[in-house]
Image 1 (tube, rainbow, N blue to C red):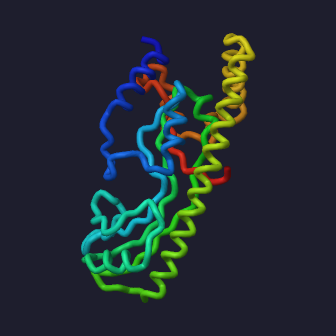
Image 2: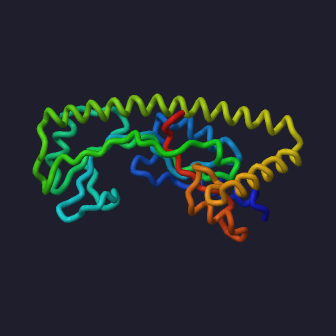
Image 3: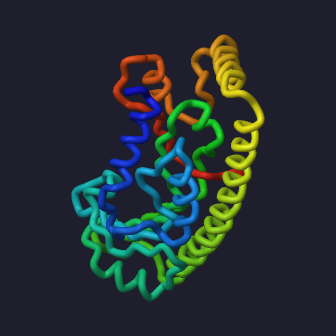
Length: 238
């Protein structure tokens, strides 16, 4: 089976699986973006989050920020209010942290040139400790201040999702026009030439900033079982 057929099989298999996220469905603000990617033969999403405000309790002994080992005191994909956070904080036994996390998409791409139209990591986040060993370390006034910042970031994140969607849609439409305007042989030759040129100019960064170093190493192995390229998207400047 060729790599394109294997990618299609893998895509169908992954998209047919049940949603195992806590919510059990794609977030409303990112549904159209996920559908846009999954509607193209060269992409499919493996997980997504439109952005959220969360309150985590690490526990009295843990210092890790690994969410799987934390107690989720509050999570919302919409703006929140101070009273909800105060009530949730009463359940904290350890070090509670208020966080805002922006849009995250995990996308599998068929090949390198497909990954090159996607975006990169953003620093548009927030993480602030509020309690220590169950004791509140800040004032309610400060909590209210933090919530306003988190809500502002949530609104900005929504605008960024819309801009990213529009830019991606435009790029895909432009790619489609380009693909139908030139013979497949010429496109393949052009892609191979571009990749070879980048390789010679900077072998360590041939894949650009769109994929991780581990993925770059995987590309060098022709016998690798993975038929695609995995990309994590944290949109920022779009």
